[in-house]
Length: 58
Image (cartoon, rainbow, N blue to C red):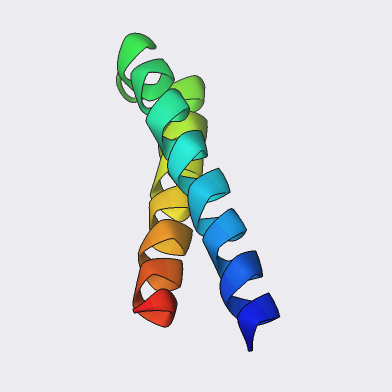
């Protein structure tokens, strides 16, 4: 069980860092363009993973 929580914690941290550093990229590129949608999806899914792992860890 401790292994699950350790892996969950590492995944949560990785997803949070990804979202934290991708958000400015999505905001910096032209709205509606291909790059904006791509980085926005990366941000969205990293936040989904971070939220899911937060619920699993609580």
